[in-house]
Image 1 (spheres, one colour):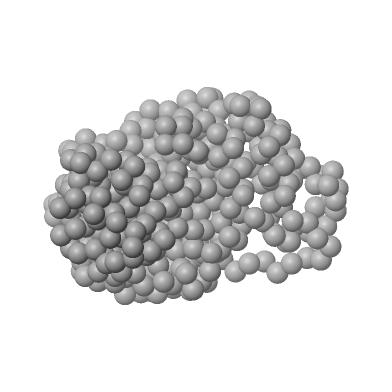
Image 2: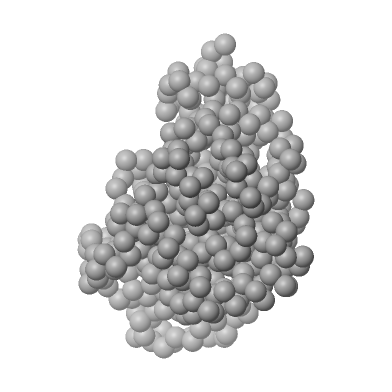
Length: 432
């Protein structure tokens, strides 16, 4: 069997067999598939699509390309949450300390930034000393001690996906139902989970622009999850504007801490409570989401969640106080409104791209991230602005990036005369 023949077959729109997909994934693992060949496979899959059978086989082959966890010693239900990717999406960082207050285990393997969206791993790496790469014995130890861990995908966790993930990020091959399904679930299926909650992003700042596209992706993921015996809930949430007010790796850690101290923006709070409640219901902690949300609000308002966040970070070597000092007095520039009116619309995709221009994400696979770079939005959709008012603040070590990034941002924030309707945040929910 030749990799080149597999690529030709996919290029011409034919369905690959189970053995062909398995052979391709094994080639990724043993370096018999080059980055160029992997990129060709990804592009052909994006253009021609993957059938349900191909998606399942690609998922399972990538899952089996590395080790699987065995958390049978953990006495609680194991649940996780995963987002399909958004801008300003720091929700996982709030969910884990909330879950620590209950008898549930959250083994969270997270991803890096993909395309214009930020990644939880990059956010955590902005914290001085935080160990995102864990040793084998650490996973179960942290679950026993804290009920959670937050870690990156290492070379032995779905390594075939890890290789494809990095190539997708820089080759324009992110927006594919089949590739997204296989990438997310290949990692989640090694976590020994009882249930998974998916935050399915929809809108101009998401990979899936319409509810119809998002439902197609949700159906694909549910189909593979069912074959694996994994319970799944999918919550469809709007990405018509960034979540919260801060976009950027350290900036989102800051906003997470502020939110856990009681200064939580409404959109972050609504989505965090909904997703966490679904996790706790799936873990049989509560019988209804309404009951779960009542108890979660108590944890959030009491300061317990913030203390849990500090404990979680410190238990993995992170030093929050040192990090605060590191990012103080960062080079910045204000952006002012050209006219008075209301924020009608935010082009969230280009807000994410502006963040990359500032150094907060990768344009190339080898790029180094500026963890302090990012954007603070002072205004969201429906907010009143006056001409000359500061509507955003950008920051970066590379001050030469300010001119282009500020032009992008000004064009992202559409100001009009009438107050618009605020986009609904949670659009739908499926349980399978």
